[in-house]
Length: 463
Image 1 (cartoon, rainbow, N blue to C red):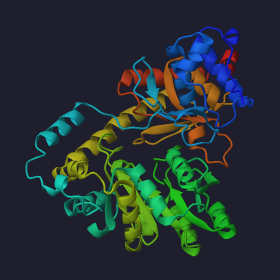
Image 2 (spheres, helix red, strand yellow):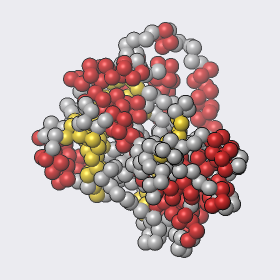
Image 3 (spheres, rainbow, N blue to C red):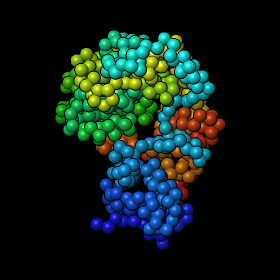
Image 4 (cartoon, rainbow, N blue to C red):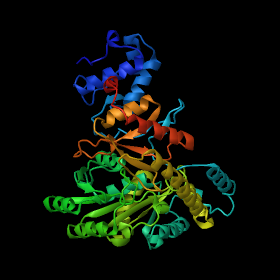
């Protein structure tokens, strides 16, 4: 079978943009079906008599749009629109002046460098040799789990060290938790717009993910009950405390309603609380209200420092053996040296200091958001790492993201956050801390606001 390739005669300048358009059209009309392996960069460049660099730029943009994905040694393939490799952020740190508002991450300043330099310089002092010599216990060293108990109390959980398992962050914990309580083919339910990585992980694990109706507090109890009544739902995945794409907060009453349904139908709950104590004045975690069936996940990556990739699973005693088994299979154990840094920061107050700093910095950004987004339909939180902007009539997500990209601004489209049952949502997720420079942040917000004051440019629809 001959694979479709673009013709040079049909390309215009700039060549890489025209090449992207040609591939997008071929994917949309079926000339390049899902799963098709594209020609290698050099082969296509040779056929078209253009530079390998031009082909590389086109492929990179197609990857950013979620239309293709490449793996070293395996080639580059056309993706289905809902496949998990469609990530909502720039995959590499930009060097071309792009204002990156696509990835939800914490703000940083010299305080973070100073604190990390200090802990690394003193790491050998009083260090238990088991931190780098031992490969057990798989659930984490006792001292790290005890420090975890202290930290988790800030997350409103009252637990013992035996209930704590050390992970390499929430994403790691999510995979461990899902695989511990499900088997391929099991049903997982969640809101129709949800954290993109649960979509990826369910796909990889062979789980049937169903997005259900939701409102400004999260999952609809009525929709949840109908789903549980009509089929064997195994897990409800919840991001109830602002970290979800739409930055919504679920009330305690709603949490209790959903817990009652989960208890009646014997459904496990996985609670993603990646931001931990960053969000103040919040309801009790689901894990505090239903500890017997909730697996709770949190980490330090979002609330202190992006490179501090360590966190905790809190689970019922009955699930600890299953979770430990999956932990061993996936990674043997969480990285002790990183957990040691987090533990020291908990004990000496650095973790609290960095959370407080982050709250203040985000609150300042929130003031800017309110000023720049005045009159638009958006939702956020003073301590959120992103906000959700609904687009007015005449705009769709793809067109708006392309327009913003043409201005040198990267924002996250909705597609990666949509479960298979959610066809579209004309909105974008905008990161609060994607760019660390406050003036660039305001300039980026001002530009994307001004975009909405006019109709889309017709030529952008073909990009």
